[in-house]
Length: 68
Image 1 (cartoon, one colour):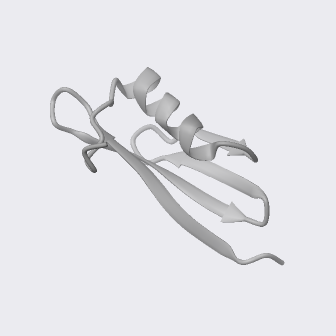
Image 2: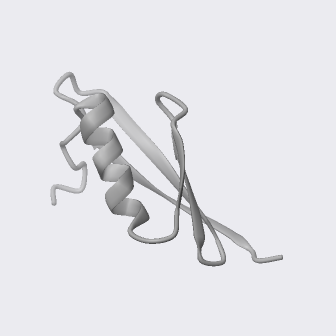
Image 3: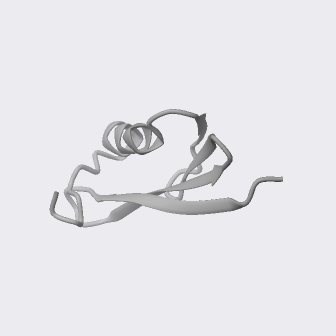
């Protein structure tokens, strides 16, 4: 069984609320889970882009806390 690693994509909305999508990796598969609404998606390719798209579309969260 492959080991699990995890990272996150976080963005803030226009009201200053943080929204986070957790990205868990096992082998080549990634599981995306939104901490705000519970949305889940499996993604093999570009999981961070899919997480950013969800945060933008579902929560209007577009401000990158890293400033990038």
